[in-house]
Structures are given as structure tokens and as C-alpha cells.
Image 1 (tube, rainbow, N blue to C red):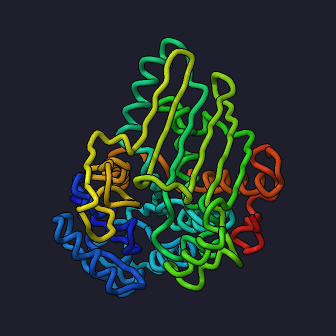
Image 2: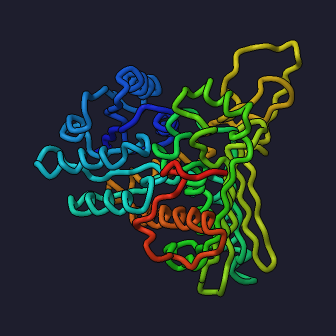
Length: 409
């Protein structure tokens, strides 16, 4: 039987998953819930239009979980609603309404370690299988590059010792992303969850658990390079609303983490950077892996397809060429089927199979908790201005200054 999936959330991320579902077998999208009824209906309509499931809009999370035509939940709502959403799911199951084969949750698992541990433990007590959605691990270039490097280079000359990853664009789509209290921080919490996990994954031998590459020391750095400048404070407030005021409550738009790992072959280094202050064609993902006699590199904007539009070509601003597109004229790279290129199709296919019992999940909420702990260590390091042994004491009670509204660049 096909796995029948309901989505919590109806925004940008959910729509990426639904588009990617065209490459997923043995599953269909049968439900959507969102506090925005119009957006939920639009997401359900998109699923029908793409022929990936006869989805319908639900009036509540409880109604969707209890419906016999829902077997699993893809949790794609905003960070500040995460605990509330999980509590409603678990409460419905515990009261005997509905049966779920799994819950897959988008990154980051929560705003801080305390929230991440809470929702993980709630779901464990309810006996529900989990999957941590981290699309970049399933990006075709990452999967192919890693497997070939380990099969040829590492097998003959030794383990890789340095991995780099970056995610950069000009800023998020929705106002809540920009607000430290709602999102849990700035770009470090929003996107470093990708890059910090990618470097660890690349350094991990295929078939072995991530725990074989153990983080032992973290150095973090955060800054507001662009969006705290007066002109951009004004621009951001105009586009995102008065609640986003970077003169009063800024969040970092640049972050870097340096992670030292213990591996079976000795020390390895992970370098990760993320930015909301990158101005280029659009979203840029990149990764590198280096070892004794080999290297790999990937840049998502080196797509192989380019278009050119002269000054005479005028039109509305959009994102039809690449996510977070910044221009409509000149030489422009195009990323066809972004949902596949960024790994959404691959991760959805994997977790469908995992929840159907066909393979073990690559990532669970235990992994999501550790990612959040690494991010929180990065914030602590940045605040203290020094490298920290991982994990530092009191980590699970820590909340970044950016999230508290006390951080000043």
C-alpha cells in the first residue's frame, strides 16, 4: 500500500516537497493543514495538479492525524510552532485517535536544544518512528561525489580530512525567519543546520553511522554585515513589516563554524559558512571534500544551463530561474528541477521507504537534536569569543542572545 502523507504547513518548503513528490513511489499526498486556510487549499490543489495525491485541506492537526487516510506526517511549519504542533500530534495519538507510521520534521528540529529534546522525547514515548528532513544530504551531487570519493580515493590513499560546505542567499521569504525570537536565531540557526551536517556526512564513511565522526571542538562566529545598515534596516522593514526591525532587534546575516571531529583515522576538520547577505544570481550551495590524494567540489549555480536577457527584456521579479533569484536580466544560471537538485525528491523517497519498513532511516530526531546542540554551541562560542569543547556544560538550557533579543552586532 502507498504511504498516505499529510503536510503541516503550506508555505515555500511544503511546496518544494510536493513538487519533488513526482519522483517518489509508493506514497501520495493526501492532506494539508495550515493556520492559513487559503494557502493550505493552494497546497492541496498543487498536489492534485501534479498528480501526486488527492490532497484535501484539514481544519486542524488533530483532524488530520486522526483521519484513517493519513499514515505519516511531514512537519514543515515554522520553528516557533514546532512544540505546539508536536504536542497536538502526540496528544491525538495518545488519546487513541489515529495511527501514524512516522513523522518527518524539517530542519532545524527546534529553536534550541531544550525544545528539540522535548519534542523528540514526546514522540519517542508515543512510539512513533521519526525522520529528520535534511535535503542537502540527498542532493545528487553530494551523494555521487561522496560515494565516488570514498570508493576510489579514500579506499586507496586514506580517509578525507577536510570538508567544507556553504549555503548563501539574499534573505528568507517570510517575516518570521528574520525574527530571532520566533525563528530561534538568525542565519546560523536557519541554515547552518544544513552546512554543519553536510560536512560531518561527507567525512563519514558510507554505511557507517554519523557517530563515528564525533564533534569535539566548535568555534563559531556571527555578524550582521548587511541588514543592520540603516538603508537596509528601512528596506527590510518595508518589505517584511514593522515587526522586523534590525535597528532594535537584529539577527545575524552571516555565520561561520569550524568543527573539529575525532574519526577512526584521526582528526578531521569541518568548515561551514552561511549567509543572508550574499548577492548573486540566487541561492548558492557549495561543498568540498579533501583527502590525501583527491578532492571534490560542488556549486549549485554551476548548473550547466545559462540564459541571457538584454536590457530590452523586461518583466516581473520572480524565482523561475533559481531560488532566491536576484535579477531578471543579463547572464543567468538556471537550476532545472530545483527540488531534485537540492535533494528534496531523494529525501522524500528515502523516508517514505523508511516509514514503510523497507530501509532504516538515515536520520532520526536523535540526529536532529545533535544538530541543534552543535548550532547552540556555535552561538555560545560566538558570544564568548573562543573555541568550546563539545558539548559544553549547560548546553540544553542555553538560548542564544539573538533569540532573546539581547544581541547587538
